[in-house]
Length: 173
Image (cartoon, rainbow, N blue to C red; front, top):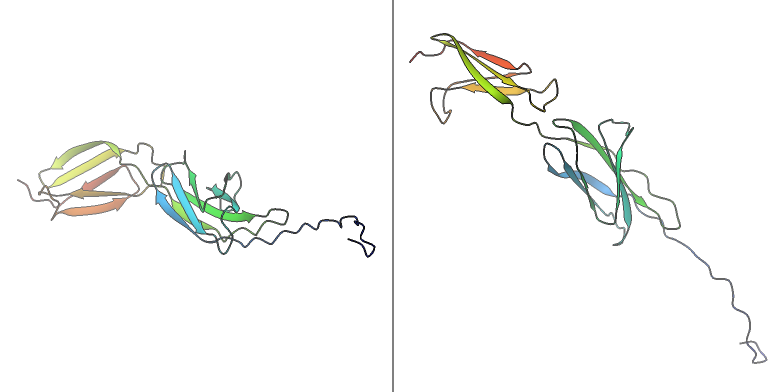
């Protein structure tokens, strides 16, 4: 009201937004051979803050899969087996700028069990084990074991990137 008791016009409404904080502590929460679930802390952002999460097999995030969510977790499926993926996340501003992306974190999808295992004996004291890679990419490291006991409490083991492993010096039975 004015001094004379009459109504005055309204003043302009000011609109302001607070700056969002960058999310913190990104970490892989669950990993399988074809999916990853990532989580992070809100870092002081209120409930309802939206986040953009990115996942890529390239550390420079070229061709990254992206998920926009109001949760502090994101699920990514359809991923390649036994492959390292890089993750980052940022908070999306409402009426203001977005936060910077978090530092990148990395986690690999799991390998799958090889298939078509065959055993061949070259002599009474030697054994050759071979298998098919299945969905695992070239460069996958396999662990092969040979044992005379079903619980593998004793025996020999080797690690290889090949699709076969040879064991010698075995006790004939």
